[in-house]
Image (cartoon, rainbow, N blue to C red):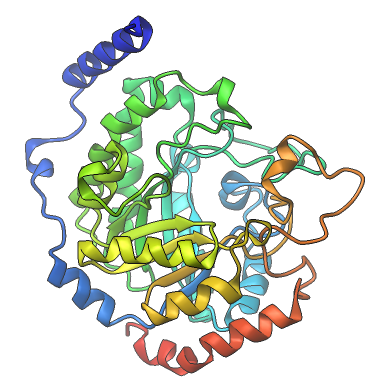
Length: 388
């Protein structure tokens, strides 16, 4: 039986995009990096090891980046902890709303963050859009964490309203080109992760609040985001990480995964699986002959650990960026199932994510020793390889 609602929605979306051009023909033909360019770039990098990072006192991207709550002292302290265990990159989520509010001051805060990161020999991978968690972001004061619930305040960018309203797309384009354009030749920036898990519909958390045609809208918009980013002529690579389905057969790729792989300069992926599956993921992506970055891994209660995945990443020279860094208002040390069964009366025996407690003490001293031992050989190489 034909789904008339979805069919009509797809036709409407096609007509909207037809009459709201959001890229110029010139932008559509800007070149993706060749395989040689991508490999040459990667050969100049140290082995990249880091964490997805948000300060302990921020519940989400907005609380991290808005003027009233941007905390240089907290960031400096925590990135010092990252440096102390040999991390040389962090993956950091931006958001379109601070840019909409005040582009110049948001740009200045990003520059401040880059100064702090450079002080600690860390080069960030910035994420511009994110389809995960709350589809209704609101600027201003963010709500307190929901007791016992994993990532209870994280918000999407763009939100559902902006995604459903093509009149918002020029604003989103200005955000992408403005941010990337401002730092296009900044050697402190590692790269640009354009859209995190773009086809995630958040079943089990916010699924009922998502646009019914979300995937179709993202499928139409994602290539344009790559075009917008390339129009800013960044010297750093563009990527968007595949995260679901199988990637071993290029002909069987899901539509959004195909766009992600075919338009990315370097290939990135997520794997919260056991070591044997992590390795299969790496091997399946080697066929694309480009550098490989794992931009999310490490969920202890799911069998994804530093001890299991980090040696494989090192063996295949895959960048390894775990989720997350310090336990705080995101509460990502709690398991995913806390959305169904909040941990209000007890703490989990095993932390799901995160490395440090808010006071800087490690969750596991053994893990810290292992991370230091694994990254230790590259500590001096990191400094020698830093762009001058």
